[in-house]
Image (tube, rainbow, N blue to C red):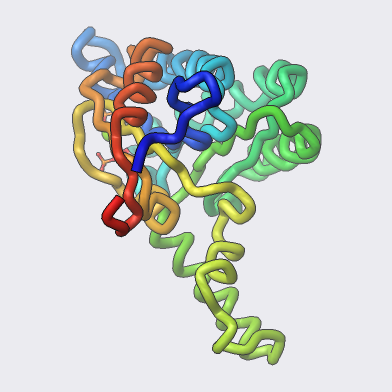
Length: 243
Ligand code: IPE
Ligand code: IPE
Ligand code: MG
């Protein structure tokens, strides 16, 4: 099976890229700086990545910003990360909206501070009708937690007599995930050299192409994104067929 191509023959970019943005702490450590300095630079890399993805023809970008397990980090670090999230949501939404970006948040948002939940709800409402580009922020997100809550919701519907268990199929299941309505990622990138999924998009990345980069997230640039897209375009996706 050949890679999808445009009419001019050049390969198409992935529709949806998901990124595990890892390595902020190591970036800071290697410079003798506190971890929070790495997170600050990481937030700048987020701004650049969103812009570059749109320019490179990608339609959906999902960024893993904070995992369900990251709550177990020291209180001070969690507080710093939440502070940066507040700043991002307060400062970026206007410009994202002006550029036609729809913002969605995937994760156990009830665990976030009430003022952050309000900022998220305002941003989602404000940008809901934008169609050019979708930015999904995975916050307080865990793939297993997401699957468990989907199963619980379906079970509740069955118990209430609203759903026939025989009708629970992949589509019904996917519709209960935080990412309902968003296509599965085509390309999943992890920075920092670690080669693991760390509980990210377990259901959704069933057939994603995986690209692991050695670059630490604060150093991630448009060139790295381009390189990952080129690597993706060299892959042959077979989905279990013989091509
Ligand atoms: C990624 O960088 C940011 C979050 C997980 C919130 P890390 O903070 O995990 O940085 P390393 O992996 O310790 O270098
Ligand atoms: C995954 O990175 C979560 C985010 C990037 C937000 P971690 O640094 O938390 O993952 P592990 O601990 O190395 O698996
Ligand atoms: Mg890490």
